Length: 82
Image 1: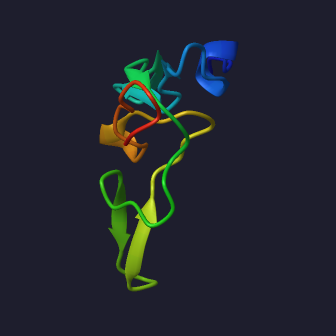
Image 2 (image 1 turned 45 degrees about the vertical axis):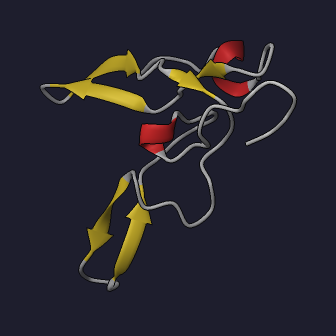
């Protein structure tokens, strides 16, 4: 499996890269690497699956920063506005 790099865990000039692992045919295929603006948001339901045994949504694994599609925050506008 690939290793998280600095750009997967730290924001540089307000952005980093998504650290969600990608798979191809059951083998590791790197990380998502889309622009990311923070870690997964608590309670997000964009990335994960419904756990029938527990009767609730379980978010997918993300080791660091996450893009919006994988449960991270949307891009932040200049000046700190969301």
